[in-house]
Length: 164
Length: 450
Image (cartoon, rainbow over all chains, first blue to last red; front, side, top):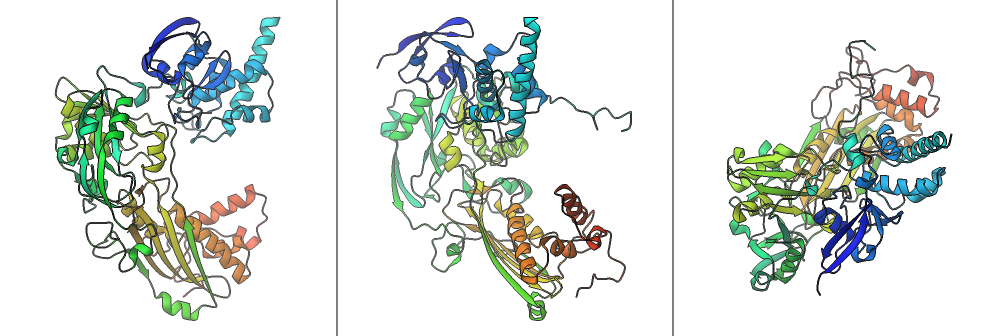
């Protein structure tokens, strides 16, 4: 089968890639575009370390043929990292020590960001439910849940200040 | 806290924290190099087989195929990673020669322009294998007539001429005769995969100055460098290993498995070569925590003192030794537990089977002993009719006690640790246990034991 050209939005700009059939979004991001914050843990949808947002929804980029995101909006960890400082979710993960080796962290941050975009005041159960597809082998999950709570509080406080 | 301490007592930011939350931390697999090739392994589909032949003709015709490496390409194909600390013999093959001893053992390395081409070429290699009987149980492996996994005629690692690591203190048989209670137990544990989120891998890059830079996620950088130098028969100064960023290891990345062959492939092609395990290789080929079977027989006095402990342990090393002989030595030093027991006999066997090799994982050798011993302690408490806390306090090491392997107990803290644990869980200890310390027993005082 011939290669095809796929166009999608990545971090606010349009990108165009030429791909063989069945090329995953993960492979395009990492190998063609050099967006390596999206990790490669299993290529079978089992670990969550490759999670990106597609039109704001968390998706496993290792299982997603890139043709499926044609014309859609893809957000990776690179896109949510501000030019200076950190996104509140990143800041909370750092402050709560919700990371150790760092390999699951990009996926955890992306899932948490999507959760807080939809649900500014999640319960512990909401957070755990959102993170069920993401495996961490180092820290355990408690500091990660704490970080998401802390990020939610910080983002609500920011939103309150901006509203005043 | 003293005012001149800058770090102790302070909360210090992790040096890699910003990189981790932004995804800018560079793991080995986040790097790429112009002209980088991909290496994939042809692996044994059988647990134990003689290799009669290998046919590469179809693989060589795959578009993107660059070359295949066989054992004949490896300058020093037979090695053992602990050779660096004097462990003998060399017994593992970088690439299998005439026999495979576990399912997943590497036979041929295929190097190709893309990962997909490497996979396709691997699938086109034809192996002519003669299946041999296999053994998967540590005790069955020691029976007469069992399939022999090693090249030296039996299935145990030899410790100074003995088939097991032995520790002897006092006379256990005489003490069993005197004991009021005998408690026996057998404890089995399963192999455990460390399952780091980032799989094992490396990229070897030829440099203009004739050296090779190897970006690796090994947990043991110099171990990997030195073993690679031995296997490739090159001076260590031709190798520059870059590591320290490891996406989880837990003992699963100490085995020097990917670097030697990737570096050899880079030498033979003069191109950067990437060799990274797939998740299924990480789970089914990379070494695990070993499976253990531990027999314990204890003789106990009416008042709860352990008079004698006999331990017979078998660790399943799988097909090759890797770190397991060392694990057994650690195990033998700890198999009586943190308890003062006057008569001890320990036989600890490192057994070879046709399972995937075992190796390091968090406290290996000791963790499984602790599991078995602490369940055993609870059973002793039940038999004697004492509280599980009490049985541990009255048998605990004190400073100055002699351990079964003739080391002096120093800085003993079991008693104080249990007192602190009791406080944390709200357990009211009786006054006599609360008053205990790990201080040395009085001169000439043997704690009331024989």
